[in-house]
Length: 393
Ligand SMILES: *Cc1c(COP(=O)(O)O)cnc(C)c1O
Image (cartoon, rainbow, N blue to C red; front, top):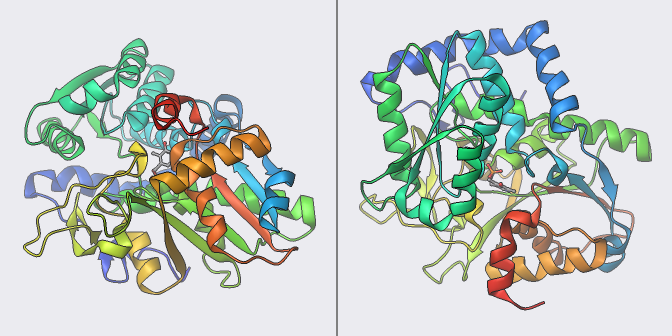
C-alpha cells in the first residue's frame, strides 16, 4: 500500500520511535509482535465479535436528507456516535486490550486529557477484568469531573499528574515513567494515531473498520464503494485515519481533514497544526507540531477538548506533506454553529469535535450527485455544558 508505514516505522519523513533507552524493550516487544498477533484468526474473531455485540457495529451509514439539501450534495453520516461509550475511541481500546492479553500482560495504563480515552480504556478494562491506572493532569481532573467519576465507577484508579502545567503532556510523562518501571506485566494503551512506532500504525488498523464498513455500506446502498469525499475532524487523527484508511489508494476519493482553528488560525489560540506546525518530535515520533522557533511546544487551544492537541499523528503529517489529504480548519464559532445546525436538521447533537467536520462543508462547492461521507466521530452528550456556556441556540 502506497501510503503505508515502512519497516522502520516511517511515513515518508515522519514517524519512527524517538524514545528513551529505558523504554526500548517495551516498544520493541510490541513492534516485533503486533502484526503477527492481530493477523491471527482467533484475534480477528474475538475483535469482531466484541465490535459487533459490545460496541454495536457496524454503525449505520445514514443518508442525511435535510443536511444534503442544505449543502447541495448527497451526504451520509457514519454514525460512530452510536458506538458504546459514545465515540470511535472504543474500537482502538478493544483492539489494544486483546493484544495486551495475548502479550501476557495483566495491567493496563493510559493517559488522558479530556478523559474520553480514559473512559474508553476503563471500559474495556472492566470488560476484561484487568487492573487499570489512568494518569490525568490535576488541572484536567478538575475541569473534567464527570469523566473522572465515570472511570472510577468502572473501577479504574485515576492518578493526578502534578508536574508542569498539570495537563495532558504531564500525564503522558507519568504514564511513560510507570511503563518504564513495570515493563513485563503492563501494557500502555495510547488513544490516537500518535506515539512511537508501532502505535500509529496499530491504532490506524484498529480504527480502519470504519472505512471498511463505509465501503460495504456504500456498495449496498448506491452500488459503488467509493464516495467523492470523506470528511473527518483531526485531533491526533485516529477517527480520520480510520475513515480514510481503505480509500487512501483510491486517488479519486477526496479526503478532507478538519483541524480546530480555535479563535482563528492566526489568533494565537488555535490547534490548527498543519497551518501552524513545523517538523519536530512529539510523544515519541517525528511529526508536525506547533512550536516556538526554539522548539518549545506551544499550548494549543480549541473549544473542543478532543482536538486540543499541539500535533497530529505522523501518518497525517505525511498525507499532508504529499498532498493526499486536504487539510482545512473550522473555528470554535463555526463548529458550534454547525453543531446546532446538525441538531436542528437531523435531530443529532454531535460531539463538538465532530461538529468541526460538519462546519467544513460550507468551504466546498459540491455537485448535486456528489457522494459525501462525514465521519460523525462522537455524540454531544459529553459537551452539553459547552453548548450551554456558548448559548447561541
Ligand atoms: C478524542 C476524540 C476526537 C479526536 O481524536 P482523534 O484521534 O483525532 O480521532 C474526535 N472526536 C471525538 C468524539 C473524540 O472523542
